[in-house]
Length: 197
Image (cartoon, helix red, strand yellow):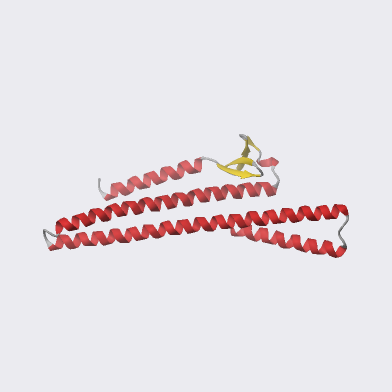
């Protein structure tokens, strides 16, 4: 099998994996419930509940599904880079073996094989860089997701406390102004974290 057939085989496998991943729904956990998201629709226990959710929950679930999908894509990219690296290591080993055999024969043949070896080494380095890049991107996405969830949690806690104090009548006009300022800051932080996602 020549190199073009091998490349074609890898592209077909990659295409098959991509199609199969996008055809399945993403599972997202929120508030102890597992939701399944398929084509912008949200299901709970097999029932479409997209229209019954409030905008905040719907957005959070869809963002979670997007993160799961992105994480799966990055993991696939990392696996692909690793497979390419292994492939290039094998090619490098084959080239080294051929170089040793060619040393007995003609000089021109030996030079050609040395070039193949260098090409394989460059390809290996490229594959290693791609894998590192994919891993770094995955960590970055996970950190952004944690920041978003933390900002969301802080806003909810502050809103509950504000409502509780307001109901009990323990807020002076000055305190209420401070609380509203705090809630506005937390809302801006949440929006900023959402944009970064």
